[in-house]
Image (cartoon, rainbow over all chains, first blue to last red; front, side, top):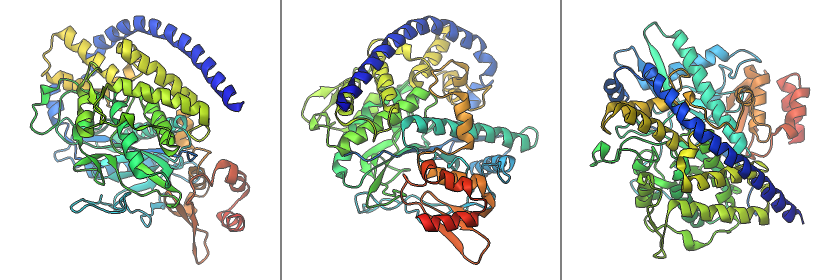
Length: 64
Length: 505
């Protein structure tokens, strides 16, 4: 009994959330390109000025 | 019946110290942590009592879960002289090798662990500001939450799951390996290039994970050389007759909350299914080390993985199988022992993520790190017409993980949030209620001057009399808010606490 209730609850919750997430996904798709454009517009302001030097100087010791 | 799951993570962060000639990562890490501790300490308010040390008595990282150590294997080293602090939220914050490392408090469900994992990032961000205020002008310490420097040096983000000592280790190896290889499709933090010896770096322009390049064995004790997919360190920091700790070293450090949440949540469910022997043998991967790399390099998500029964499967189809099996498991066994209602959230995100990976992975921008990073890098390369070898693309990769809020590419995009800012702020200052971390954190909040030593499974108090008082905490499910919350609230002094504990325990 408890198991069935649990299952039912899960199913109804995931139905609800999958409808919500479908809507979310389509609106996100539209937002995505404008958000990316914005990020690309401003990325050069924050990107390390000398990319090659930055990448070569990023050296870590192994850990763990 | 599966044990009540206990979860935790340990994250080593990348560190650079700019503006000095010969920077030393060990002293930079110590400086960083000490700057945080001195900025935030003080009786009753700070996360640390300067007198509290870490107790190494119970640390034995060279004990192998299989009961033996293969000839030639190297036990991990312990470095007891480096900075090693215990925080009021129950975390341990220390220098490990040449990195700052933060171990979360013990948590009872994946949602709670996500919260304290995010609190850990916040502590590192606060440490960076504290350190940079204290450094001379022109110097700066910068922290990265990633796992590799792109030159063959890797550092880990380890997960810990307490599992039943009764569960045969061979069963854990078989099923966990299948999960660790296939889960890369949502746990990967993304990486530009390969770091496998003998390969040209840009032979692999982009791969799903930071870590797959570094694994050479299926099972073993090492974490720094010849890394194994299943690590056998057997150090439960708890009653060894009841628990073993599965120490998972194969994962990436994630910035996307959904990636972290799924990494922990799905693995927690898989562990429960292993304990209850709910998985069958069909999904055994034939050559795990090879498959781990193949999956990481397969941007189509369609590469066939060879199974031991001669059939093949894709990482995505293996994950769907594990998802369906988990769904069945939860409806038969319930979810209480895996992490309560947060498990339903895990199932919802798991399903959503697998569906999108099968149809349009771009939808997962802001949900999964590799998707997000790849999209940023690809779009930037398109816009500026860059070749794959261009250093700017590697720079973008690194800067995705930069924890400085103004420089982090990750923090510039709107990612899916599971935890609120307020919850993270609370988790920086407080331990979780549901485990022994509560006792550790609350005692440090209330009596920092009386705590001499803290460890995962014990604390030592100085009450002012001749003897020090050691309080063992071998059971992670005791010392919770429910058990000792009122007791701690009602004790004015630590002497009262120790007396009450000796009466009740």
